[in-house]
Length: 161
Image 1 (cartoon, rainbow, N blue to C red):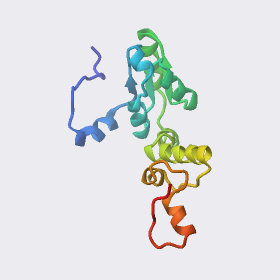
Image 2: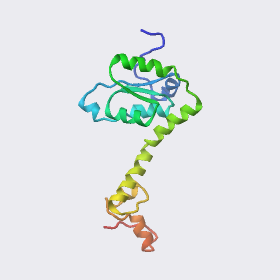
Image 3: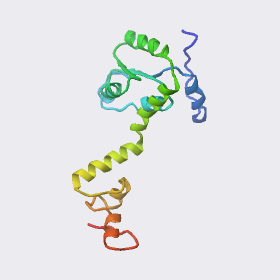
Image 4: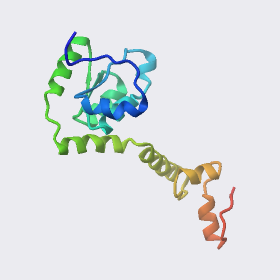
């Protein structure tokens, strides 16, 4: 037992900012299982969005984030995990470092992912969608209803096939 390590169990959502403000390092110690190897650790992004560095288990998604950001460490084994937590906790958290961490989280936001999906659909179909909602509204048709409506001079969008 360490005086600076506390297991508090579940806390109300409204209390999370207060707890995150007291944390030095976000931890994502997942078991190496087929499920976890195929999962994405959203908690890692939540820690980064809070401006915290992260030490996580050496799993594919965590390794990918660690390659993208010096503020994410993917480590194998309990001894290496503990040593990395101690090292990361000792690093200063300047305003520039906190902004850098938050920028990584922002690159993985749902809005950023939706934009990337829209770009991929545009490439695959040749369509020019305004956003993912356009794709959903057309049931995946290659032409967005908004594009078709504006081209045809219509005041209201219509679905095209």
